[in-house]
Figure 1: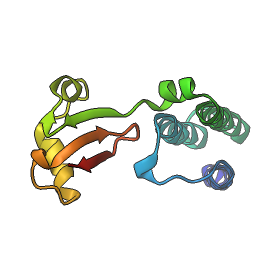
Figure 2: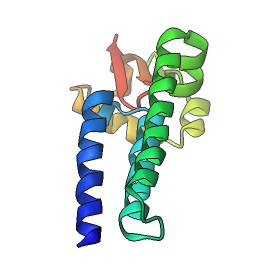
Figure 3: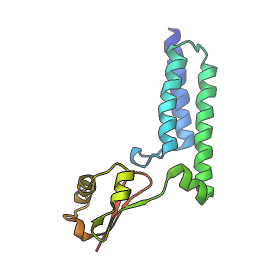
Figure 4: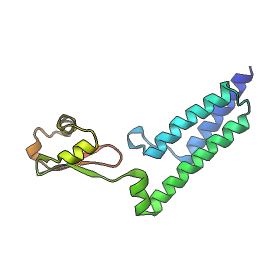
Length: 145
């Protein structure tokens, strides 16, 4: 019964925390959001079923990570330099219909990966693309010729 009560308390806390910190769609999650999501799961599991028997310990640990995530988000909002460090920068992977191989290699992408996304955006061939950009959030944008 103790585990059930601790799990319920942790669940309520996380729901409130998510409502306070704001919601984002999975496709637009940044690196700090992903870290927060993974770490919260691990911390909750430890606090509910493992050796840390206190709900207070879980609450403090998760709050710490949430505050760090909010702080990172605020820094990225206020400073262009920090935004580039925290969130990354867009990268051109196709220019004037030609794949930019060094950029593709650095992101471990293939031309097939680019074409798959291009087809989703109704583009049939590379020569129809003026610029193909891998955005900082992982999505791809294309500007047609």
